[in-house]
Image (cartoon, rainbow, N blue to C red; front, top):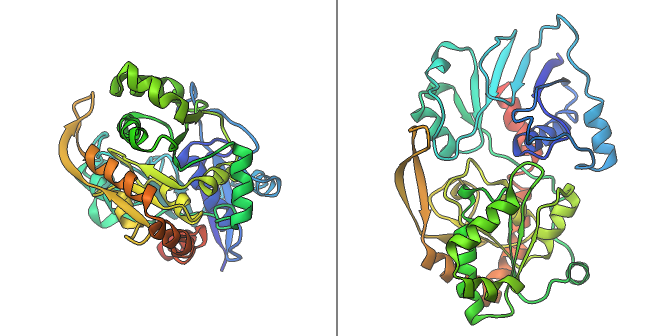
Length: 371
């Protein structure tokens, strides 16, 4: 019997929650036993979130736009609420999507009295939600995925041509994200300054997102805080940066052209760019002890030594921060820069590792198990 599924979320915005929701919706549409509806939620941050077309290819955008709103009075079997709210209550089963990076946030003791099941993308995030008061028996982990038709490696000749078009020479390290403090960009540029002293042909490319975050401002603050004026002058010619909103095919080109992806994060709920980089055959360097431990293996990734510590946010809410070690980050960047065997193995193994476990088809299969 066909199940009536309502997704409450957002379309045409590049925020990570909206991106996840849209890719999931495209896969839900492939399932003949589901009838999908979409209820557009108010933008969480209307001053910074913006609607924009062109993130997907035209056919996918048309499919997303054509998902109808639920008819008035319809009783759904399943509701997936991407803003994490437990209220208002609905007919059928309610799944509230929640993510925590450090475990910060208001108490979730109200979850005990609700009918909702919380879905979160990592065990790391799950533990943070439980510490905030969520009912452990009703917090489920469904990891994120990738579209392997978008995020895939290129043949060597096509990759060489792409690098030529981008103007990339030498060994290129890549980071993609908001350039908010939790991403560890200050630590990354400090490590890169040490790399440049030994390998002046090395490059670092940073992709921000000024359409949602103050990425350009955050990068300037991080560089000025972590580097001396002499170091800034030394590394500036070696760092590329864009904060333009790109469609997913153009984002994939950055992963495909890069030599290594680096993510020295202090807190993440999942860290989807790491998975996307691996899908493109790009080896990764990421913080040990966080959610990326759940979807990386030694043959395709290098870990930055870290230490966990108790912390509080500006509202006094307790959480846990992961502190990646600078010397370990530098050592791993030096290793990947010089270890051609590791790069070759990662380029060969990483795409299949992701395709066999972490596509949106796998994700929706997990959702169907919950349904």
